[in-house]
Image (cartoon, rainbow, N blue to C red; front, side, top):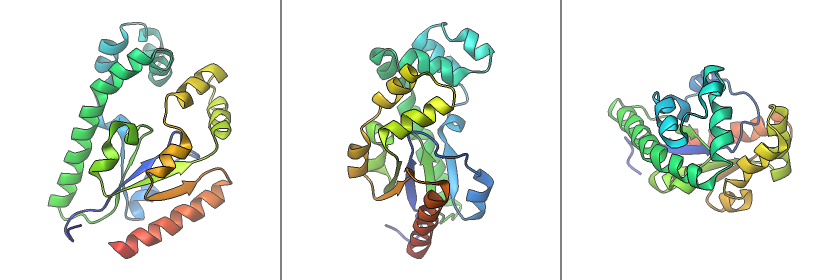
Length: 197
């Protein structure tokens, strides 16, 4: 790994174990690229993929729910959506890393998204952080967000199993405990990454 090159790590989270404080992450020397920020014309892409059935929920500003209801119920639509989005996400992600490298940024960069291994992004980056919990905890957490059990199981079922994801990990964060336990692991990982920088 070249000294001038920014370290690039992926945070792979099938769900958020707690609300992130992105400003705090930046002050700790890390930069986050939320996938939803990479694709400003997402509604157009989704309309191509799913037709106009999501309009009502989109108007209600519930786009994620509309998309999830459509694509997780139909594997062909999910595959079509992924084929449209993944190349664009990869291009934007790599462009951001290149911009940081040119400007001399040496911080570790994290991309938070659920399908990074499935899309092959992990092979193009320096490492993979897999944040995980037990599948039943994933379901419980999605239910707590207001998702139906069927929708939650479809969403979890569309992802690579946790044990398989962990095989791809450079680092692993166990989110099955308390937030304090998870944060302790994150702080430990941050210390390791700073030592490598």
